[in-house]
Structures are given as C-alpha cells and as structure tokens.
Image (cartoon, rainbow, N blue to C red):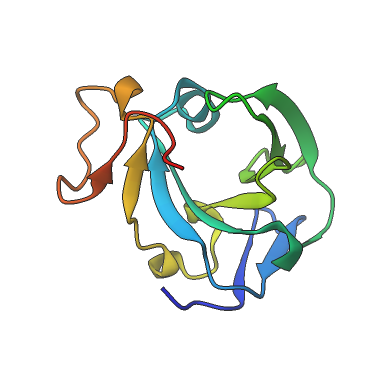
Length: 136
C-alpha cells in the first residue's frame, strides 16, 4: 500500500494533518474503546509511523488505557468534535481516522482487530484477516 503524503482534517478545518510515510497497515478496530469513540460498531483507521506525522492546529486529548494495555491519546477537534487520530506512544504509531482523510479512498482495510468484541450486527468484509486481539 503506497500512499505517501496522506492528508486530512477535522470537519471545520481547524485541525489538519499530514503523513509523509507509507501506512504501516489499515484496519477496522472493534474494541470497546473504539466503538465508544465512533458511536458505531467499529473504528476504521490508517496506521502511520509517528515520526512521519505532523499536525497543524490544536486538538483536545482524551488519554486512556486501550484494550491492548497501552496508554493511548485520542485527539479530537475542540471546535467541531471530530475524532481525528489516536497516538500510541508505546508503539510510536498514529492511527488516523479514515473518515478524516482528504481522499477517503486511500483507506483500504487489510484486517480487523479486537474481533472478540465485534457486534453481531456490524458486518464488514468477511475476506479480511480477523484477530481476537491486536496481532504482534
């Protein structure tokens, strides 16, 4: 998956981002934290290396411990409330919300994680690799 220069923003445009590296992977996450974040059955995100990611504007941060056991920071726009990205310092990764991408077609899901929490009514592509937790 080669999509260098991934760009996106919140709904109001007050916070925008760019990643100059190719994505590490793209996934749907069914953990309970991500479901609460999106208000839906799963969260869809592109994972990029933290060092390639730059943010313009301000975000509000909600910090919590994810189902992985890692401390994660959920960044959202303080004006419009859009969930923009999740930073995982332990893994040095940023998970960019697919719906915030300038070109949402850049998101090509490869796998599903935390399927042990998947809602029965949340139907995704059955051909995707599925994991009960986050794979190594």
